[in-house]
Image (cartoon, rainbow, N blue to C red; front, side, top):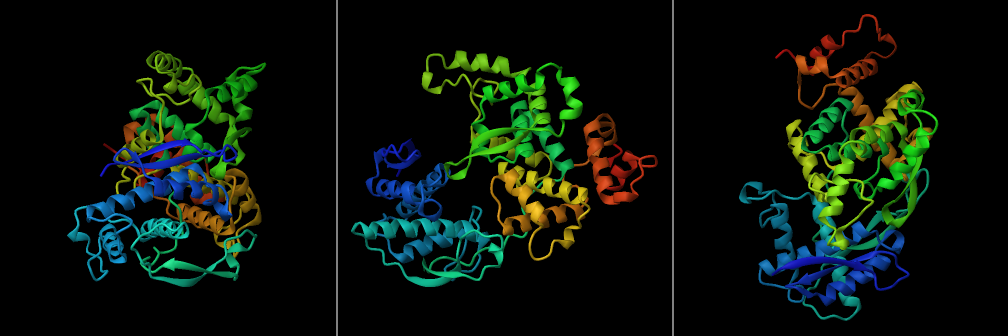
Length: 461
């Protein structure tokens, strides 16, 4: 069985979303297409229009279900519940008694939450097929459970309102609740960006852009070159960049982007970021790559984009897969091998740094946030991230606290020679010391090299 996915504009012009459909052995699969058409319209939050990335993920999960059923000689019409239990256990690396048996499988198991996410989509698929009277053999054993209502409110995480929903009983126990997010200390991020630059300067600039704006990967890859040109014209009026640099480091420009759910929002784009990307990328390698891109695709207008921002050495426009692969490669070099750094880590890093800077500037202890998060901190996160709820704010607070308490770096150590030449690394280490000593920090007696060596950041080799 060959499963492929293709994306088209939704046939209803009022729904400004793309539709991802499944082809089985190069033939459009009608049942899944009917389900996915409905999901575009009603599969989003509160029954609204679904985000494109969420919708494509649903299509991939249905295609995955088709492939797994085919591997055991079944299809979606002939499958029984026991077949789905077998598939579930294989993906979780469980034995027939639902016990962990990781050594019995040659591949890595998925998390319980990831498995439940797939089961949820498969369940919705079958319920939809049932509603439109499509015949199939599966009888799902379901039960009704009480869950917290999903709605807004400042004290949402304390809300005691519940609703009753029906679930498929083959779902498994959720993973432990997430108490902290994946976020990088500044020193580790500095190493990470350096390694990305060795792969290709464009990946370092993308990472820099993401960690400075907090944007997700999708709006990042859609950034347009003319947007940056307009900002550069604005900040260069009357004075050179060097003259502007000193008092524009903490200033911002508003940049529009399309957020999850298709909403148009604004983010703060620091002028220091505009200057950095201009000096390291737009003024150096970008003109050459842009011309190479134009020449390469001059006879293929469907692939030509004269306003693309992120372009590789070979003239091809960077896509999400390129970024993820580069992040994985750089992660492994700096020591993040068990859990590699993903693009979304940089969004969490951005938010965590914001909180650390805010709490330190206001001299608010992380341990004094109480049951509800600091109101101003929530407002800052909401403004910077585009959306936030109290639970998320508390997780970011715990992440920031953990980062401040665990002062040692998980990244690689540097040689004394490299550290002595890297002014940016020295600045970051000094920031770590200022964070640790607070008001007791004394610039006159501080030795950045001795401090770095005491923390295991620098060794003499």
